[in-house]
Amino acid sequence: MQQTKVLVTGAGGFIGHALVSFLKARGYWVRGVDLKNPEYAPTQADEFELLDLRRWPDCLEATRGVDEVYALAADMGGMGFISAHHAEILHNNVLINTHTLEAARRNGVRRYLYTSSACVYPEYRQMETDVVPLREEDAYPAAPQDAYGWEKLVSERLCMHYRLDHGVETRIVRFHNIFGPLGTWVGGREKAPAALCRKIAYAKLTPDPMIEVWGDGEQTRSFCYIDDCIEGIYRLMRSDYHEPLNLGQDRMVTINQLATMIASIAGIDVTVRHVPGPQGVRGRNSDNTRLRAVLRWEPAISLEAGLAITYDWIESQVQAAGGMQDAGELVSHAG
Ligand code: NAD
Image (cartoon, rainbow, N blue to C red; front, side, top):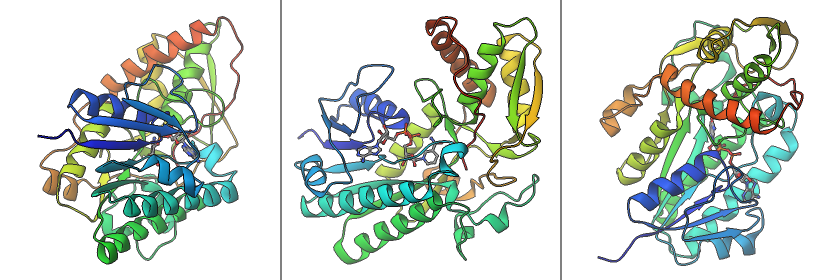
């Protein structure tokens, strides 16, 4: 049988890099595309091209000769980034997704998986910490909090129409806060788990460990470990399900609880100082009813197990940075 050829966009990023390794281990021929090479480990892709997917010619180049596309490229980050760059995010991501999908169609790509986000869900359903878990149909009537979520919603619909009008087999996954090693941990685009791991790793080097958290820290989220995320993406791509599907854990914790768990993994007591800052919605959780029904599977790696691996990796990064002061005060979280 001929080897299936796939393109992973955003392959220099956190989830894309891990997906390339997963697909290589399953015998696929893989092309990775990104603006940058992976920062923390070499890619295992057969071919890795530095391209700017906002540009139409680059999208044609990226999608040539492949059977399937996993579209992960996006201009994105944690809450600090998302809440401060609306125009840039909407502009860049509309161009990336519109051009990549059309180029895939022109090049005869058969399957196309689009990575959407829990940020599509309306703010009015996420006003309490003890929030009702979000079902896929809750996305409408639409009222995402940020431009990031609006763009994801529009690109979901673009996928739907390309399937109906052009016959491209599209898949749409809505991630809920993916975390793990080899992801951005410093610089302003990092999300809550990585930011908290970094801050606690730096605090551990001081005699009186203290970290800052934006808001009162009572805002709630669920967090899904990278290995479960990759498994879920792959299962969805292989399925015949073409409606949007949540992919996340359905165990909700507060940001304060997350900080306590990481401090315990680090083996220290830490004082938390609450400071003003963007917090995103007040509460968010995934309803996994449809995920279980469609994929006959759901994420199983515990938050504690995932955080232990993530913290160890970030602590080693902090140590490698060698006595540098904590560069940022960001404790952001996915929208
Ligand atoms: P990431 O930022 O680590 O990876 C995205 C990659 O896209 C980056 O490497 C970036 O350089 C690349 N990119 C940006 N603009 C580009 C362009 N013009 N051309 C080519 N490449 C470009 O993010 P991630 O966490 O790996 O996220 C992957 C996908 O999953 C994204 O679509 C993101 O919106 C979505 N998502 C992630 C999460 C999460 O918790 N990580 C949650 C919801 C949705």
